[in-house]
Length: 595
Image 1 (cartoon, rainbow, N blue to C red):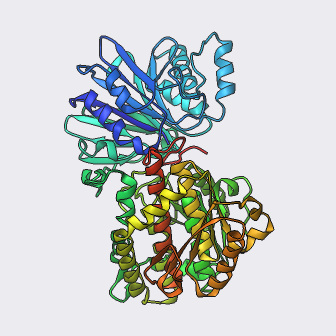
Image 2 (image 1 turned 180 degrees about the horizontal axis):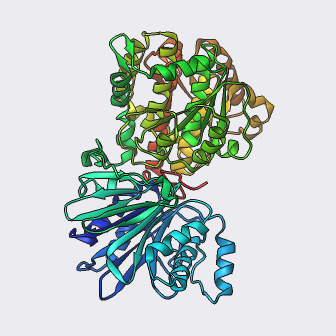
Image 3 (image 1 turned 45 degrees about the vertical axis):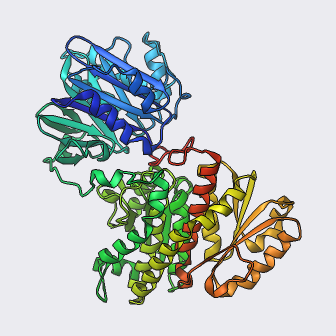
């Protein structure tokens, strides 16, 4: 969730650190800081707030030979100056930034306090810095890399670390476990970052650091070691197809709006990558695993969980018993039925900590794992037996839009491949056209959004696939408007929630399925009778004259793609009318790398 940058070499250090942190804003944060090291001194700048504020704090002519930077999303201690990164050890030997959570930091802190160590912050990060210093000072041979290794052996939990050692301004040290960290190789400079984005203007090739690896970068050298020397392997650097242009606004006022309107291109790109003429392009072994599986088990969180709900219906419809679990629950209460389950992990970032925790549970029982992700080379990609990429392009806004569209569309294509249904191509072309129609009619949705933004509570109703979309639309509204919202099955109203319906409460209903259309409209009469303000979103085949917004027809099983896009527009325009920070909503982060 936090972001790390680091560099040593000939680059303009201040520019890289602040540019890099700015490019990581999409990950979510509540404070930020940098540290610059030269032979003369170490200078640390940090504060609660935005990168723009940090930019004002760091002197324009600030120089350094080596440096690190951080955006923090608070886990231990409130977001204030004292808890902001970087953190220094008591005697200043080590300065570090840290992503992740150290589970045993309290016992380690008590041990250090018993030895006379005093702490300034509430963070687990400061514990790491002081632990390194303790190991360094106690060692007969004063080697910072040995001190780092001994510290890592003491830690339980997750970490990505960038570290400065005060006696050597030619290196930036690092370590990684369950939290992403990438090395970038440039001309007479090497870089560290939480992902590729900060380094796109600077590095020419990249190395994704594995779990339990640690080491350092210098101007011309990259040294990577493993806590288990038997696991050390040659470094292989690679290129990335991500381009700087992918993260530009291209004239849009917000990334969220840009990414909503990239959805038709996402559909096209998925077809290009997974369908070749009348043939599907999937690994034959993966297809065989699906055929052998007696149960499909989805694990996901948030928006990806809602995509998994749609995926469950897809596979149930072709005779595959399927279940969906929230990953953070499954991690503690794993439940597996069937002798040959196939697990599907869905994660936009591929770094979701709750899913990573589930990997070991599933690997111990020997079941195959398929990861569906937007991020090649991510932790889940590398830990899984199979990976299907979303090809959605970089998603910057915290609220996921086009990645959800890609997840549902890819699950539909996978279902079609399992039953040999090449009509999916025509069906998705219809969806692409319907989405372009939505873009042209978005101001009609804006009018509805501005009306619901005035109310403190909003309800979304649906049945079947429309209920799955109602949950996702409700989540989007919560995320970026801070309006209380619920998604409900239409038939459940009378079992309790209808008690919340009163005059002028907005109720938004999705009507996409002939089977349930009459039933959901009957439910709407129940809320109308109690004074609710009802908005109906239907398609042409099921529309009535009084409906508020009508989408073009698509096949019913693909209706979540267009209805979700309507929900995304509703949330965007409601947030816009309320003056919210749309791309960076409060308390949220893009890549959830803590449990």
